[in-house]
Image (cartoon, rainbow, N blue to C red):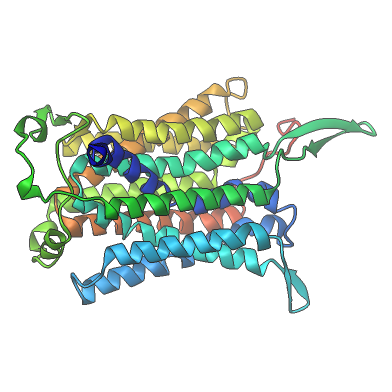
Length: 436
């Protein structure tokens, strides 16, 4: 009796979400804590540029995994790789709150070498998770892929909520000698406490994965038939499916057999189309638009910026939860969804280009709504594509992860010189009328 609840679907969904949460929570946490650490570390506001480069180097992990899959198909033990990278992340997160503010002298200048080294390792883990966590999810029925993306959404939401509770970037405008100047308020708790929170979250994710691998599962062929749950009801290209589909994880042997089968049938026009949509959506949501979010929101006020970040991160898991019940299978429908998200992305990019004097300054709720809709549309699109690629097999989920990572990298590399080298966008100044 005690084992029945432990093997139940709600517990499995919860463990999958917590497991997925650990994929990008470390990188997301480093970004939201930047306003605090830049006031301590010698690199100051050059630190975001360093982080972008280190995250790009983190793609060495996915490259190594992809080459291994290509050169030795079926030989890579995904469980072992996941255990290793999770253990590495947990160990680094123990040292991060202790040594993050330490500096070393290099060529006569102080550098925050420990923090940069920890950032690189955590970036390597996060990037590698896209090409290991997703293929591992092939063992589970399609509805768990949707739960996985909900968990990935939580990896952005949780650090954001904690940072807001910390009071990051809170300021007051004070007049000194007839000059209005911003005065930044102290945080509710220091950066090392925030990094201990990161350690707890990474530990929870690692323990959740350990629990998933240790639970007793029944092979597919032994599971009782549940046709009423497993057969999707399709209406105008939209699949409606209940939360519990009655599936069970497949065995390790079944995954190994599927991995070694020829993959000629995967590269169809439909699957290439799905991968292209996935890459473009991640280029926008993970690379391009986050680089200019401050330019789009801060002219309307810090509250607008915080609401856009928080509500956008809430829209992510909510959109993924919607996909638990309704999956759009129509290629045309997915294209229209992507086009609609692209319209909001173009508007937000235009606001960034017009900073610090964008239009509708008296209506800040417009930019907040745009961020919510933009994030929600592309979050739904990503989880639907992940579900469809799950049906194409284990290799499809590997390419799903590669497309996510490649799109994110391309988006970041395109925006980095525009923001940090050529300074195409102008930042709004605090406590100043930027449009006078």
